[in-house]
Image (cartoon, rainbow, N blue to C red; front, top):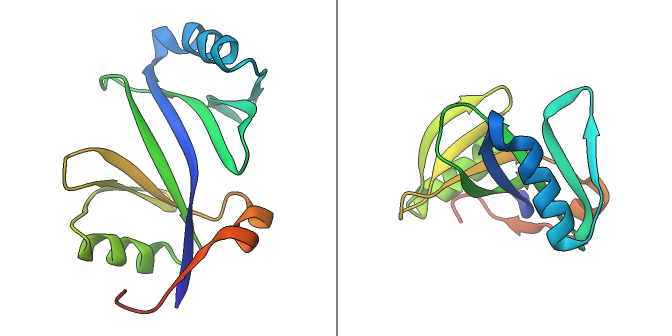
Length: 129
């Protein structure tokens, strides 16, 4: 058995648009943006949706897009569960997987990011389901 939950939505933008995108979404949702030196490619907007992180992410030469992250206490088990539903693996990066849903949209399966919310809200999945 493992558990998972939707944890984040990210606006993926090219480097030259990052600062403007952070400013736009910060103003659009009326929240400040938190940038940390240790994670220079991410800016997290302060609490616009309870239980869901909203971030701007600087990416390489890809087209701008929005993607979601699913956090889990067992990345491989969650990836296998999602594959059984029709997702495919795209690329493993450090400890997480970039995946593609049946329509071709990208999303990530990551380790637990928000431990307190994970404990309160995660769904339990039996093996194979």
